Every structure is written in C-alpha cells, then in structure tokens.
Image (cartoon, rainbow, N blue to C red):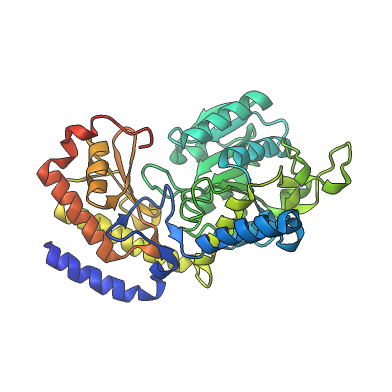
Length: 410
C-alpha cells in the first residue's frame, strides 16, 4: 500500500471517528507525534490553571484552611470516584494516594488476611518488575510461595492452596490484554482472590471491576489517565471486602477518627480505611484536573477509537515494512492500546524516531513500544509515524553511533 493510499484511508477513518477526537482537550507540542502516552500521558489543557490555583490561591492565600474550604481532605475519595467511573467501579471503592508499589504492597497484605491458611500466590513470569519485587517481598513476609504461570496455565494450577492471583490487565511490553472476566471467575471458583494491575489499561480499556466481581486492583495515575509525572496511584477494594480489609500501613488518614489523635488505630469505615497518610496534594489536584479530559466520554468509545487506531497502525506497518516482527497480538480483542515491535536495534530505532518528532519508547531487550492514547491521536498521526519508521530503517539511522550509549531513562 502506498502512502497516498494510507493518507486517504487515514482521512476516512479520522472522519468516521471525529466524535471521539479529544485533541482540543490537551496541550500537545507542535510537530510531535506522541506515542508514549502509555508511559507518561500528555498534558490536559485543564491542568495548568488548576495547579496554578492550587499553588497561588489554595496554598498561597487560603493556607491550611484549604483542607476544608477547598476539599483537600476528601480529595483522595473524590478523585477515586472519578477514576472509578473509568474502570467500572461504583462510588466508594477507589482511593487515590501513594505509589503503585505502595498500593500493591497494601493490597497483597489485605489479600493474605482475606485468605488465611492459603500459601501460594500466582503471577505471570513476565510481569512488570516492580510487581514481581513487591510480590516476592510480601510473600516472604506472610509465608507465601510465589509460583510463576502463564495465563494459559492458570486453570490447571488453581487449587485450595492458592490465596491470590496477581496479573497485569495489559502486558507492559507486548500490549497483550488478558481475559479479566474469565480469569477472575476461574479464581473465584477455586476460592482464590484476584488482584489486577491496571496501570496500562485504566483510561484506555473498559475494565468493568464491579461487573466482573474483581476483588482488588491497583493502578497509576500518569499513563492513560494523564495525571502528570509521579501522579498518585489508586487502589480498588470491592465493597464486599471493605469491612475485612486489613491495612498493613495503618496511617492516620485511614483512622475512623483521625483528628481525635487516639492512641490506638481503628480503621475507618468503607474505602477510607485504605487511606494511609497525607497525600501529595499538588499532584492529586493535578490528577483531578486531568481527569476532566474524560468528562462526558464513555470509556467504550475510547476503546472503539483505540482499536481503530491500533489496527490501522499495525496494518500500515505490515504493509510498508513487510516482515516486521510484532510483539503485540494480532487479534483486536487481545490487544491493549499499544503496538509493539521486536528488533535487535530497538533502542536506536526509538531514538532515531524521536529525532524525527515521533516519540515512542524502548523496553529491554528488544521492544519498540508505540503507545496509542486514543483521545489525542489521529490516524493521520500514525501515517506520519509509519513514514518516519520506514525512513529510519531505510536510511540506517537506527545504527547511528550516537545511540550506542543509552540514556538513564530508556
């Protein structure tokens, strides 16, 4: 297929999906095709003014009164409900604050308390490194044995010794989307819990936490939710588990009466008992403002746009660069919002593309990862990206000696 045909096809698809084009809600740098929203989301237009107000008016003028007058105290729950809408959770089940690592640690300890007497945690061997580190650390603390199994092997391994399964809804390297409903149901049939990492699906893929009976979930705020670098993470605790939820980090914000300054810890009712300590308010308020980019938007419509974009990108690469080694799944139903390629010079490809204004990222050892944040990308953008990829490879730009030394952040 020629680029003329790709341009024409992109124009038709952009017209067909015009209703879900939300580029005007974002501040995007000119001349850049941003394919790294699965690492750090683009800046929503609503954020700068919100942060300025938080700094100058709320902090600068109203000072400590802002905990009441500007609703700082309730923000972790208020922002949690805003995220809950995007991941299919009714109000009162999501709380925001701390990092994904902290939320995962907390949720795993809660799972151990919910399933006493069970000794095994199952997880996928290729899951995100932080997940593996935290799982191993908690397992050592509670006496679990960690077993690594692929999703295909899960049904045959489930048994009365399994306490919890911990999986990423979308694989961070390949973009493979797991069968959340099916795996959750199978775990429950065996009496086990499931803890889902939603870092690469929240804001991009319908999750349906309540609909599918998920027990626990965690996720970050700075990828497809666009909350900014270091945006606080979120934790989901299904309402049916909240009374028995044991908070292994019992900070004062999770106390039933935090300002009574009691000597003994008593957990707050509901999702508030999953709170820990004082949240990073400026980051939290930036995330709250960022989520306004989804106002009036159905996550199913975001997914429909994403599927069109990723299918178009995958097909265009296959047409223009036959023989490309795709790491991401062919089937739409099993692909998250990214297209990944394998290449021995993947790092150089990513750097050469960035030099041309097409920003993706590299994942060790050989993955070129092209994240497709549907709200602010168009099919025409993807033609630009494919043209740049063709030119990089044809010109050998990926073998430039400048890329021999890798940046600290790849």
